[in-house]
Length: 399
View 1: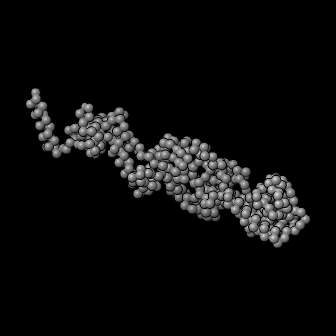
View 2: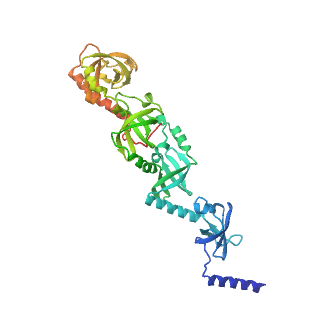
């Protein structure tokens, strides 16, 4: 009996030598043929000589070529153990699959092609995204406009709630950054959106009018959808000729609006609604004269003065120095929003869309007061700038 086993071993050794087959070692990548495949395990024939098995987490179904195997398919597998409890090669698709996944990511970065990632979690900065078990990050700033969390007032808890609603979904993205050593990958959905927008945008030029629908309202403007899924921003300063504290006072989501294209920057489109309206300031100098006393409604009380509505289209500024405020008195104690008072026109500058006022008291403004009104214009500009981001971007929005 012992001699028979020795003879079998010699025959097997000769067979290996004859077919020039090397016994696989742990870590080797081998080619094999599928004998049977199930969700639990895959049996493989290795060169017609050895039997191998892939099971459990080593199946790695995320890579398409490993997810729907059938008998006769040829695949690559990594050797985990030269012999398991059944005398088979213990093999893994996972190790091979991860290398294939990294290769695909490297190629996507190089060729600027897209890949699909699954959203597995979210934090306030963006979405944790997974490509074939390789984790990456999709920042909020790299989301397409339709997926950006447009939350009124920038409520962080509601923004996070919106981001978490994407968990489980698949996004088509490009690879922005790939650092294998640090296992750091940054994805961009916005790049994909930009590329798809370009053909549609080629039909539009600056100065063209568009009919659109408001899709989101923010504290610095409204977003408008028009044409073939194109989205543009009307900044608060371009909504109307008069001063606006909040776009939500004038519009709501779903409203239809006409606008003119004033800038196209890549896939970002900036619009103006007021350009389609007659500029009321062109007739302001005929309607209002220096020294004229007019009733005005206080719109807003600021430390530097009052914003006053003279009519629906013309608003003026009464600087704090023009309000007869005593040394120990506070402007907020003396004036309230919605109050109506008589004001004297100090200056009218239609080209600058500025009108200076003083509280009517029978006195004429001095040269010193004229200078202070001029300085007040600078303060008003600063106030306007506080309303808008330093650089308006289409993707940086709130609802």
